[in-house]
Length: 289
Ligand code: BEZ
Ligand code: FE
Image 1 (cartoon, rainbow, N blue to C red):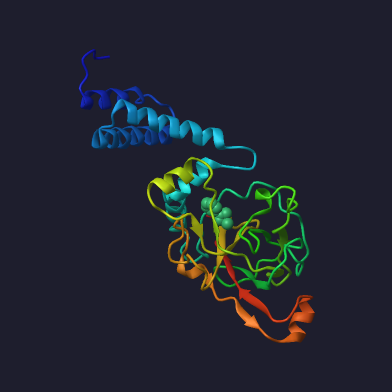
Image 2 (cartoon, rainbow, N blue to C red; image 1 turned 90 degrees about the vertical axis):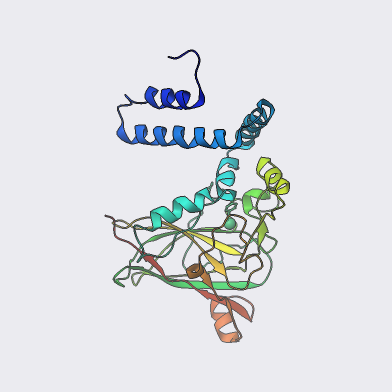
């Protein structure tokens, strides 16, 4: 090891220290991390105080994480990294439904519900029906696919954000597609909402004059044997913030009109007040490679 190192020698020495890493992928990742991180630090040339501030920010980000809060995922989200990872992986399966971010609220098991159930039984507000099919890239229906959904309520809150107000499981469901691959459920029309801003990520947004809002959406995580897992959303067309999602996760193909259905007989069939809104979302899975 050199004693009087200049910056470039230091970078080479760190790279060299990883040169015998047995796992080739880990070696590649650490090599690239070292090269980019050192270039970044050289670029911004932080003062010692700024470096300490950065360490403090990351420390507080870690300390903000709990069983029901993931501040590091949130940080990755607002930096666009989560969406970049989704996009890179989605490029392998362009025929499938577009994926988007998982987000930090998929942290409890969704309750099993029947097709057609109300997935937000504790939430008041205008109701919608969401229906569609789970199909393969060649149009073949996929029966018995596991459809995990979670959403905020009409005020923009997830169950886990409101202990004592919403029970865990409200706004969530585990459904199974029928023999023709179809699914449908009732719910409240979700509202746009701010991502959590009471932690370090909120500080970052305020310091950079960015708003924290996500357009209204419902999350889907769909799995079926023999198919690649899909993490996605259906976005409610016309929602506020549809063009400026705080986590950069809107893809045009995922924005659907929730049209008003004025037919009282349809409403009665679904067991909801008339009129209601209807969103249709067909989900295409890609076979496993
Ligand atoms: C969500 O949609 O649940 C979400 C995604 C990213 C950050 C915060 C929330
Ligand atoms: Fe969400």
